Length: 566
Ligand code: PEP
Ligand code: MG
Image (cartoon, rainbow, N blue to C red; front, side):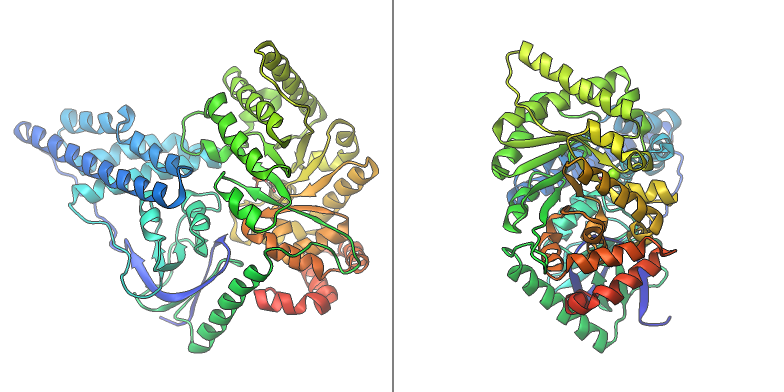
């Protein structure tokens, strides 16, 4: 076994962590099939029911712990697990399988769970695939209690880097507290619960590294790079020292950058807003000096539900966010279920149209409380966007019939499908603003999976750059606001390129806001524009990256070196 071993995953929570490994859940459970006779059915059912109630108690305790530490925002993440403990399709079906087929509880549990997961895993939408993991997590809890096992406890000694196959949300609440300083998981994506909770707890994390190719021993030194998604196991003393220096510098850097300005070397102000997924991030957005919320991903409030919250419930959340941010603007994006085309505006079913109207009405009501804008994701055709605007007008009419007030607000669209970028001039006549989603734009232009850990480099591909340039040029000619809210703007090289292409507004994850300002202060726009022109003639993303590092590195070098970028 060679050391150091290097793994690559998805950078899910920024920062650098250094510490001894703590591997949990290494023992893979082997499930055994056992037939039971008539007389033991009732004791098997009782054993299963006891496991359900112990598991429920464990999750309730975690929910309480989470609420005490971070308020009620995250409670729904655990509520869904509690609901699943009383779900007829899951729990009753397991009891019935034990009773009717006379098989042991573990086997029945596994059978029912696999049956429920199958259609979810086959769905095109990552939202539904993520729900299959929820079933796995509940299964994991129940199996643990059926086996009479206890949950791993956090180490009581110094800082540790947690290494796991995956964490259930209840375990994450428990395990991401100190002394855990970093997290590495085999499973997961940037939007998985584990990733969200890692960001909430401020724990640098790399998820989705895939099957661990090396047998990692407890106490081996592990380095977690939450910027690049790199994990080093069994680091040398020199590597360890270098990582510790980066970690400490980054902490100090964040402190110092909290209230700096975002003005380029040649004196142009750039607007830096934050991308937010949950209301609890608003406080950190303000602390980090964000000038507003440029992208509020509302679908996160549905992560743990079978359908979206009611209009009143949504209004309450939106109102709180808008009031906390006032007078700064909050841009709410309607629910984006990603690959699930059925939820695009133009071909909504009746049920989904009702959901969308509920949401639009809630946003319109909240618009009276501060500065609000509304935008639609995945817009691909001009008719679609016209349909979206018509829907907003219909909602406004209904609200006025209900004597509810709503203010006028800008209605914009994400530019993240190549067709929207190609016809940007036409869309610019219809929309009040553009927000460019480089994650999906790169995905749909280059036909690669956005969960691919190498995806961070892709927006720099010259094909994507040409679409980005076309979009911002059309917006500038129409004198309309155009921000970049995809993750390209969160990458210092990508951000420098965005500035060169003409973007003057960016929106980045809350934790990246200070770093983005530091990059902006080091960029000279005239040079960046020259570099961007040359980049459009390059033939690969790697060549573009090299070009940017080479030409802008003189000013940005020290900063990049510190962040381990160049
Ligand atoms: C994008 O696609 O770049 C974007 C910002 O939206 P999301 O990442 O939520 O799909
Ligand atoms: Mg998108």
